[in-house]
Length: 152
Image (cartoon, rainbow, N blue to C red; front, top):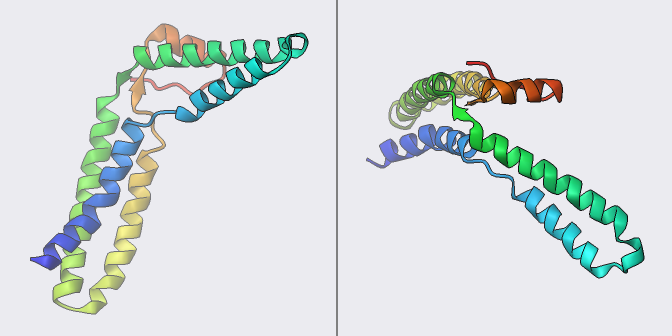
């Protein structure tokens, strides 16, 4: 029983963390940066506030545009589905290998590690794909700005 739980956590833990982290990733660092600049603006004398005010306005505009772009995107189900299938297959293979290593022979750790590393590399290559589909007008704007875009 314990060997099965250890193998299950070993196999599914990294895959679940990777998918959840990729889909639910937020960017609080930018908000903290805006807050620091706003606090700096308040603490400076009036005659030297102009450059910081321009910086704060530009960063706020960029943050608003990024937030609007995020609101208009849709999840690319085929890329995410393929990643989930590969992740589940990888988890199953690693689960079987860990069970064999824990119950049959310690020598099973070697092929489990090699095959697990290969499957992890394949799964991580899937994270390079974009999981979001942007509307055509957003794709055109992103392409003109030099940002990567996802196509359906």
